[in-house]
Length: 339
Image (cartoon, rainbow, N blue to C red; front, top):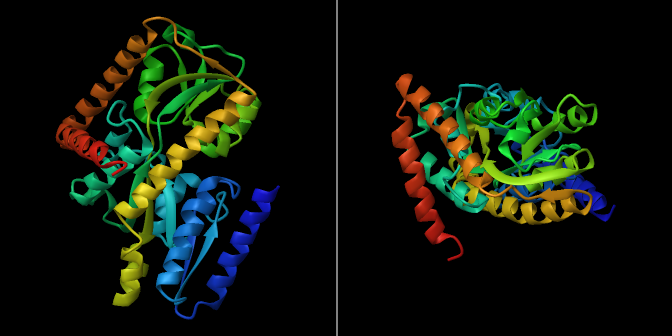
């Protein structure tokens, strides 16, 4: 209740700041609930930083929970200026960010902070430039490892997945699910709660923080930590809007872009995974994989990743080069984290 009041106050503050801005106003749209930690700690915080650095000449109003455009249209909403800034999942627009989604392959990094650092380095290297040429990217990041959460279904072996309808977080993991006999179901994360509740799916793959953020622990009581994937995200700005800003206000945006905010996001996700796991297990059961099953899951995930890389190479994309770059950046970031 107290958190809800605080968040409501933050939203009012954001509205007030935007209302008095004299020159430029930014609408920042995202699909997380207003009660989710990202709303206050990432989006409201980013807006406040921009407003303060611009001395009030830029106002920022945050629109949560798909109130300004559906999640699946997040990137196009920035392109078409449905909102000046959007935060979205690259995988929501199929085949648009194939090289970026290499960051979603298992085994590249261990934490969201490390992965976000590596992803931002990969973007800054220019390897992904063509995928984002129609917007002005503010920063990219990932969340922490995604695990399996099911309703009434105990999963301790890969064979337990046979016949289960599981919401797929990425196309790569969808292939893996199909290969082990499960039925992958595609849908945006905000639909998970209702779909699980009414039995349209038996479970889903999400990091612990998202289980809490979408209240999915209320509909899934069985949890298996498998760390199969990480999701790629981007916070991006309408290109024409950015280009219309005078140099000093562009600097206010530039100073709140890149690695600084990639790391803020990554650290936030890592902290939220800890609290999300605690919340999820307060009403659910954590199931351990049977002996030797971790290797079976890893093998299945690796096969799906290899298939994805081979497909991209077949389309003439430098997938293996980007994959190796991502691993190098992840190693560099692991050495930097905490220093």
